[in-house]
Structures are given as structure tokens and as C-alpha cells.
Length: 115
Image (cartoon, rainbow, N blue to C red; front, top):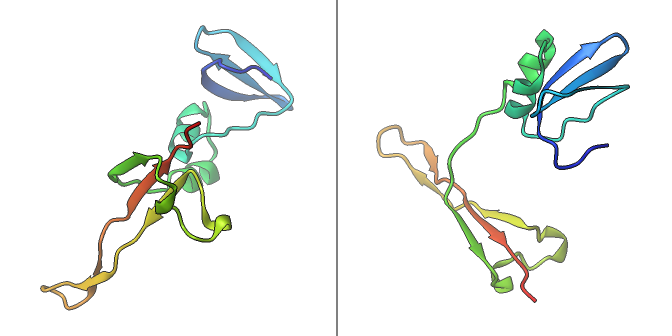
């Protein structure tokens, strides 16, 4: 395992995977774990198969305003629901044009403990 080494491309080779880092160095491994967002993972794959393109390309993203705070009173009451990222979805409002509920975008908050 190598840390703090940006990966640029992953390529299947034989029964393993070849990893090219930012400097262009190639290293072969038996397997690789890609721990990124799906769109980033798809861009890393040199030769994605159809199923990978379908699954990793299916995710949609949106921009949301986020508040970084240290106020623990804003966290959910249930300890098991607390996380470093929390979001709150407001109520639905009827759309004047279609008469259907219109959901407001989620409000996200990132909590940072201070010592």
C-alpha cells in the first residue's frame, strides 16, 4: 500500500492491475481498491467494461450549500444518527404549475469537533 500518491490510471493486466501514479511510475498489484466517488473511479479506469460504465456513470450530482460549524446542538439528537456530514431536508411545497409536491434542496452541515 502506498499513501499520499495520486493515482492517474488503473489498467487490467493478466491476473492483476497496473497502477500509474502522478509521476508516471507503473506498479503492478494483484488487486486494487478504488475508494473515490464513482465519476472519479470511472475516469481512473483505462479500459472500463460496459457494466462499470453503466454503474459508475449512473450517479447524478448536485451543488449544495454547506455550513461548517462546531455547534453540537445542531446535530441529530440520536447519537447513532450523528455524523461528520448531516443534512436536513425541508418540507415539500406544492408546485403552482403542476400541483405536485416540490422538494427543497437539502441543507448540509459539516461538523468539526474542537479541542
